Length: 427
Image (cartoon, rainbow, N blue to C red; front, side, top):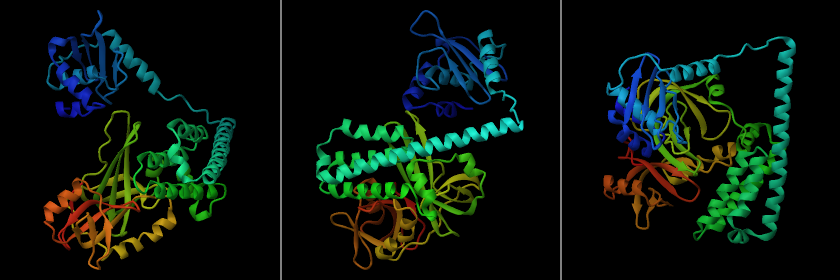
């Protein structure tokens, strides 16, 4: 690995900067490496230097410093020194060998008892776990139904006077009920209320209605909505389970992106257009703490496999095998805003809780007050951000094809194109 690749392993920019400054031979002693590991002693604030070692296979690290960031600045710095050729070949000290041995022991799988009795016990335990989770979730649903009824009696306006503690109480109840989807929906409602604005009450009422629909359907959803209701309650499947299922093969165009940070997890969402399927899908990447997830796919288009998750509209996908990306070619664009919005109806029927949808329109022009007017003279409000500024700079007030995200209230530009031309990402 080169120095840039090593620094990219840092959990945040602060660690990367500190590691770069720390990667001087004068700060280190007993540097060394063999084909399996890298090690060194780094001066710290105490009498004893920090013991730092790295597995060169999977880049796992161990450091005796008290940092809660992983990998820490010492673990990154010793890898920078190694990339620069400053760590000579040698025999690992005993403390490195002991660490490697402990890792090997932990990673060695224990023999699985495959006797009929053991298989039956595991199946019974899984069934009990599933049943307990379902009972907990339904208890959370019942509690939230009562909470919503109380909010309805008091009125939406009363929410503005509630402090954070009141909101955290119901959010914690949903977390304890193992229904993270409900907890997230209530937190989103709280964010709307705290954000204020001239139409906060309308937005809050919209979210209350969505919550009411979800808790109403949760106990006995229609068969065609079972998967999406489970997803919205917070039931998940692993990416590996998704990858084990058949993929959708297509030529995919990566155009739209949105970054989110709730203080605990950072999320990068991308919206991708399938040329043959003629539909949008999403690819999502999460990172905890101070880590930066970055996009899962580069901007452009590629031919390859994306594996669908069980529910959602647009459907979430896991990235499979794919060819290298190339520049994006033109995609299908709706003639008017009326056509574009009408096209959302089947998606909302599949997943009425989805709040962000890709939207396209031909030959719109940005008017005073930042509205996007189509060829029929109908307009949608546009988010005033750097993407809108770039669109104006690129097209100078002339009509252009627009691709962006609609949240039911405003349109956020993501890519623009000369009429009929190839899209250019602006956000």
